Length: 272
Ligand SMILES: O=c1ccn([C@@H]2O[C@H](COP(=O)(O)O)[C@@H](O)[C@H]2O)c(=O)[nH]1
Image (cartoon, rainbow, N blue to C red; front, top):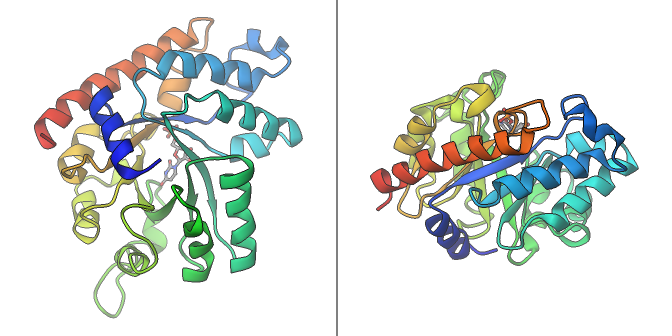
């Protein structure tokens, strides 16, 4: 999917919601456990109930690979079930020496046909560029993550008096463009998002951290939105586990719709 199509979808749905498919066998309603593929049965209902409000889905690969071969099968079935006009993100946080990255890229872009993958930047250009060789596919590079540990390295100032995340943003723009690269920026970072935006005015940001991690959607839009929205805001647990009962699909739908309605008014306010 190209950037213009993504933006058109955002305008059409008045939404920049990414639904995170972090599907956990220990958290899904117990009645689904008797299904042949409980993970897919759960995801199917989540997708059916949220597709009207979402412009992206983000399965976190850990939740699938932890289940072994059946988890990979559930992941592929889920990916194939997502409507084709909705952007897909493999939250895999890969990146290795070049020839290994090349095979990660082949796995997620060719074998599985995801639109994008999250990649860790710290092994440098040759670990990231193999992912950028695929047409119409995206790298989503970790810039300033939502977790407490992001303070350990990402905000440390270098000799040039710039935080490490700023170096990631500057350097990586020599490898890819705003047409094939996005950045992960945590919603829990508040006004720091404005600082990140200064280094990457045109790129899309994937923003996890609203919902269960307590980030503010209002602040994300205020500090991060640009003229083509430039944001995909993810919520996983807040939507998936809005109810632990038989009504989980309906509860997920309500939660996704609530976020979409807030997003519609934020788009009016900051991107019109
Ligand atoms: O900085 C980051 C990068 C990735 N994530 C991932 O996003 C979701 C968030 O889930 P919630 O349940 O909405 O908190 C999850 O897959 C994380 O691994 C992140 O949270 N922060």
